[in-house]
Image 1 (tube, protein in one colour):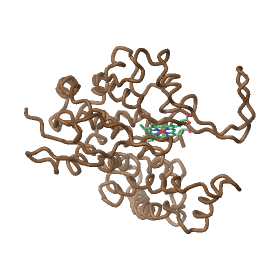
Image 2 (cartoon, helix red, strand yellow):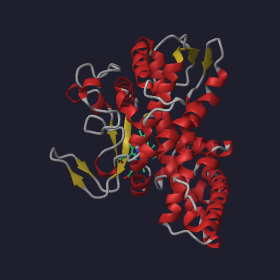
Image 3 (cartoon, protein in one colour):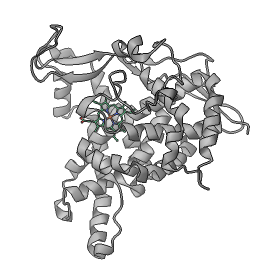
Image 4 (cartoon, helix red, strand yellow):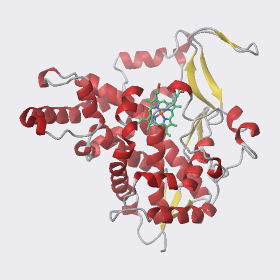
Length: 378
Ligand code: HEM
């Protein structure tokens, strides 16, 4: 799965950049712009709007221009992970017998499996595309212009060419894995960054000036060249700081595959799950520099370390050979989205205070508090 993404999406970030921006523009227009008129407007729980906005370009790149315009597709992309995470919230009553036993019973007995609804929706739209594409390819042969998206890449990689022999279940399951990895994570990061900005309006002017300068590179449709992302240095630093202070207490669950003993004698027994105690990384002055607990939006500007850069002092995307391959895609999406918001609007929290994260056990979620969005006077 990571190999597929690396070969077919992350090598083509530049190619997808225009589509990503067009989708973000139209989704922002639909979910935000159309609700903000001359008076300031309060948006509660922005996460639910942002997840729809983030899902729009992801759906476009994953299953193509045509189907991604459909509201039902965007809703499935947006809701799949949160519906699934309802399973994680079920108290682990039967874990005494076997880890996750209650969830396994619910899912395998068919009593509760939130994935099925989304899989059926996805199959409906994928089927439409697969049929159309195979028929067109048969009709036009070499002159057929193949659509460029992940679905087409999978069709070709798996040599799918017989309409009567397509395993739609397997195709949908592959795509659902990608949805699981990409949508909630990116939306979380984006909603946190927006709330962090609304909480600290004093940094807005500096970011606005940078985005104005960057926007000089835009074409007549307001679309930026891919390279413009590199010039959003302050915005990039702001996003990295927001990600650094995501706020989880424990993160990065990993299974221990074999008994392991660290040099200090600490033992990890096989088959246990280990999690990282996040404060050990982000509140350590040696790793983060001075005042590691405080939100300093421009702390990364002169460090030459972009928001997507992983390292021992920044583990949000994991590390090593399994580090998140989607991190550049995610950061680009967040930057393009915030670029537009900063140019169009002033934002602040409804409470007028800094809003922190919402905790669910050791995991942090974006705050559901209100954000006031007001058109910028030019
Ligand atoms: C802010 C957004 C994101 C965050 C915070 C995030 C975080 C992570 C983390 C922590 C891991 C596990 C790394 C490890 O085990 O060491 C991971 C893996 C992965 N992520 Fe992301 N991710 C994000 C966005 C995305 C996007 C947009 C995609 C796809 C388009 C994606 C695809 C993947 C895949 C395929 C893996 C598995 C990699 C492997 O096992 O080799 N992620 N991500």
